[in-house]
Length: 421
Image (cartoon, rainbow, N blue to C red; front, side, top):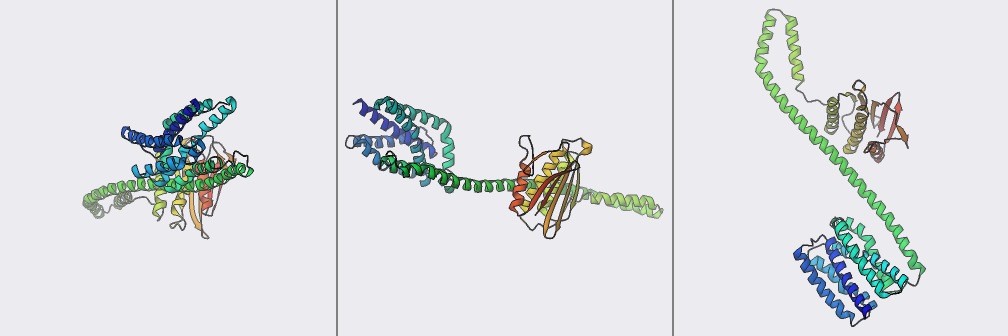
């Protein structure tokens, strides 16, 4: 009798465990109203489970469990709370997966004690512990994952779904797993191998997309900042032009006096001064390509702020390849050079850039002095500083993606970055 009571209590706690965790994973706030609704649903399913417990055996009850608990729970999450079907399914299957620790510890305790009461007592204790840990530390992460796009949710749903199908097909509905069937025993490692491979491929593709998005965001930010600077320069130049127009009459009058008095030297100085002043109102441009010009203008401003000499030779105006990727390569190379020279005394700080096109190829060459020769690994300079070393990796990755080659060398205390695309 005591054993039957423990089995019944365990079944009700498993039910409560699964329903509350599924609701939490589906990003349903467990506030007062939702808790009342959830407990009402749990009570209905629980009463049905208790009634069936007196008419069918425990193995039979577990066989029909998906029909009396899991399916209604999925429909409950979809219809009542308006959750997506994929979110509801993966939430329920993940909750089922998290029952595994309690099941394993229960089996272990039974093997050690040969007592069903001890087994179900351990199962209940572990379920409560897993529930507390999951609700406090894990449920938010799971709910955010399961709210992502369908593709991402399906990727994360693979393991819980296959475990669910595998457990019911080899343990509940059949005894293949318990009979030490070799096919069943080898299936799980086989599946994990295939799943891990698929996950790595998909994750890499998603990582590429994320990296490209971050680079696009970085270049967009630079472009917006540079446009703001150019707009500010234009406004300042307009103000200066208005002043020039205001003083133009006085300038011409003074120039006329110089002509009348045959004072050529003073007239020449006035003209040169006026010309320089007018030229100073022009926005600085390095080339005709706007995107490339923004990158170079931004870097030139950084060099000026840090008192670094920027020597440049820009021989390209049109970029036939992906502008975002090309600009990202250039930006990483220039930033690496700037970070390196900032460690040197001010009189040694300089960055040299050459951009040119030849034979249908684009060449980037960036040179900068260094204080200490870096250690190279696999052709890339290594850095012990936190957050450093990613620039050269990004350059190599993007260059290879564009079908080009890059090289990092040290010549006569100069670090040289060469990229040919």
